[in-house]
Image (cartoon, rainbow over all chains, first blue to last red; front, side):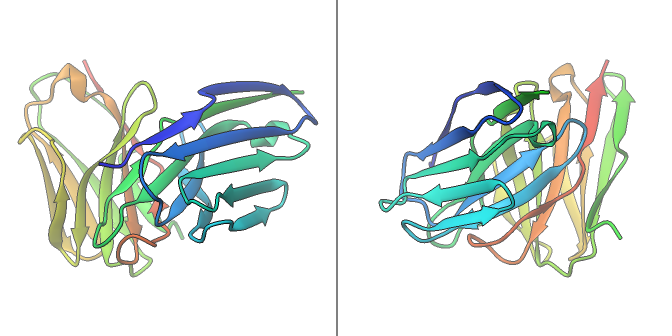
Amino acid sequence: SQELEQSPQSLIVQEGKNLTINCTSSKTLYGLYWYKQKYGEGLIFLMMLQKGGEEKSHEKITAKLDEKKQQSSLHITASQPSHAGIYLCGAAGGGSNYKLTFGKGTLLTVNP
Amino acid sequence: DTAVSQTPKYLVTQMGNDKSIKCEQNLGHDTMYWYKQDSKKFLKIMFSYNNKELIINETVPNRFSPKSPDKAHLNLHINSLELGDSAVYFCASSWGQRTAEAFFGQGTRLTVV
């Protein structure tokens, strides 16, 4: 089965700093999703990447999928307290598969 | 309107009780899921239904039984609750499989005492 490894597990940054969260898969990714979770709330879909080398941005968050489609990074520029939360990467299996597998998440704290 | 709604949001119950969590989506999606998030925030799929048909049934105790009366609803019934069942349960829905952009409910925090 596919496994996703996220690093770091937790991250504390000062407001205004840039940061990167990584997600590595044990198998080729056919679809990689980034979600954000705030305490007491559901997961919020951020971005989906499918093609090798693909990069997408939304406001100050950029996600990239490497050419080999086994690693993705999420980069936040000029972090703000509103960016705080748990970031999870998720992946769908290849072929006919409804199963989404998630990494264990990265807890981001942004200090004002 | 909430896209994926779960009820209740919080549930505190005693060991041995039977409880249900309801989920409804108004997105017209054909696939619905139940996920469990444990105390370490590890999110793991439990069940997946496509057009009311069970597609995925991970290694979950028989005490957990999903029920899908129609495409828009996927309820989770849990019998004989145990302390280890305490977790946050998320319902989600999507179009089809694999490349789907899943929408998640707000979660139900279940505490078994």
